[in-house]
Image 1 (tube, rainbow, N blue to C red):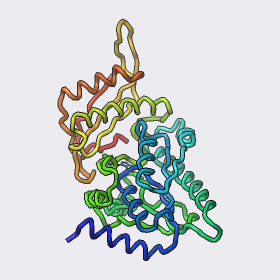
Image 2: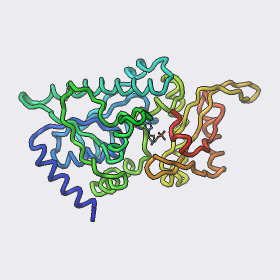
Image 3: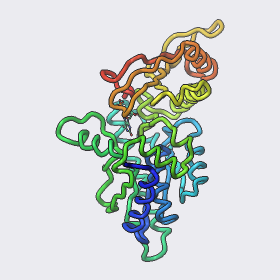
Image 4: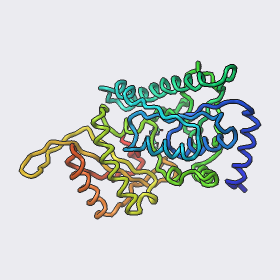
Length: 324
Ligand code: XMP
């Protein structure tokens, strides 16, 4: 019988044996998987685990600081890296979803490489970080095979593989055999911040693929405000924990509205909330009209630049969860 306690105990022992005095570098995303993997590694090797968390400027409102605080609170050896401008300038004028994913993936590797070099430079002479820690879980392993395999390229997820050869780091993936619910149980055993454990999945490219069309800092700001209102209302109404994933999408259209005596011509956001087990299929959630009305009013009244809110009532398949 699989238990989280036994898994934790055994994995920490295995990691100690495998790593000895070696140092490990790891990029954290604020998500459940990378966090739980890092906490396991930290239990095994302490501050020989060197973590960093990148702000690509495509995160939710306040997310970078909140997540960084929570990592520091958990005692991880972590550095925050502000790389917003680098991502924005590479993304400027690019609208194609796969192109945006590629740019975000490549920029992330550049930032990673730079951060890894800096960590190496701070290690004592003769000591080298030889390992790359990753929060890969079993479904990622499967999906990576199907995405990269001969059958079809669906979306170029960049969570698995994709790092350049010259980094020459050995990969260590303590959660490689686990499903998501098992990762959450392991996290609970390790007393990981419940706010991180209960988080909805969030795509690596973040708002880069929730802003349809080209990405600008101003669109990110508008989407952050609207999304913050949506997610806060889901939490306050008790719906957040009943939903597998929710998000706000910035649409590449403007529509006419009226505010007082003025005609407006502003942006539209779509709200999405789905139930799912693994993201492979998903049903749209029947949120109450009253809640949708409250969220829509709040967004339109408080977020400058938006005059219309729509709710996505499509399930997967044939729609996907993300719009890009
Ligand atoms: P779709 O849109 O394919 O999404 O129904 C299924 C799940 O995958 C997430 N997703 C991504 N995650 N990089 C990621 O790390 C990506 O490029 C990406 N695209 C989709 C999506 O948020 C959902 O949980």
